Amino acid sequence: MTLFPNNSREKIALLFSIFASLSTFLFTFLFPFEDNTFQSLGYLGIGLSSFLSSATVYLPGLAIITNFYVAKYYNILLIALFIAIGGVLGDLTAYFFGFGLKKNLKKLRLYSKIEKGFTKRPFSYLLIWSALPPLFLYDFVLTLAGSSTYSFKKFIISTFIGRFIRALYFALVGSIILITN
Image (cartoon, rainbow, N blue to C red):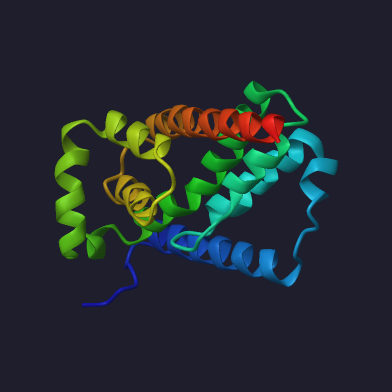
């Protein structure tokens, strides 16, 4: 069994996702941001923070911390919007990673367990996982969506709605905590 796909579209998707994930991860550690970097960039910085956190497939991101701190200074709905947009754009690395490895992922035991829920109601499944606090399995669910060649448009919509709900929740909690302190 070879891990690398034979199809050229799958190879491009896999290489893109690996490059995007690793370069984003290295970028955030080689060029650490100051505490006020994202605040000084405004909503664009909030979206960038979310993108950088989401683009690192299977590597931890800290965008939730950004939600807490900026909630005191910005509109909570706009915070959620920009975090959701940045997060969905970053989630594309996991989607393309799955697209590139679709034949090989199906051989994993974890894949078959998660696939059962996904195949019944993929839109709802993605939306719910996107709305939950980030867990290791979230990236695997996104990878599953790409490997199953789930509709790209539906992927964007479901993950955006879920990410918006998650970001809104954490921004609200952050604003309550920061306002009371």
